[in-house]
Length: 129
Image (tube, rainbow, N blue to C red):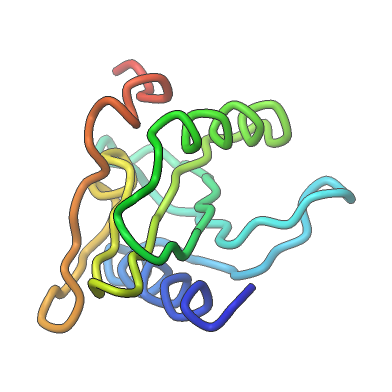
């Protein structure tokens, strides 16, 4: 994990902790995988939930939605719990997150802007209510 990814991982972890989740970073999972963040807490309906956040640092906004979708499919098959994505655009100091992750964060955007990943990227993985 490079320095911008470590920074973004800490930002996401802090925003989840502020919302009441317990987080662990760089967690071994099922012997062969590592999760950037493993979070445990209560959802909006006060039900216990566990999920993983994968954090990627990118240089600019030239990412392809299909790349995120491919990663999402890979992680969906690797992990048996929900996986959300956070993309840190280092050059713009912007953190883009899946909409479902955004709902689980309490974020102060004084230094870093927080944006939701455009819907066409997250549509394939949006959990149904």
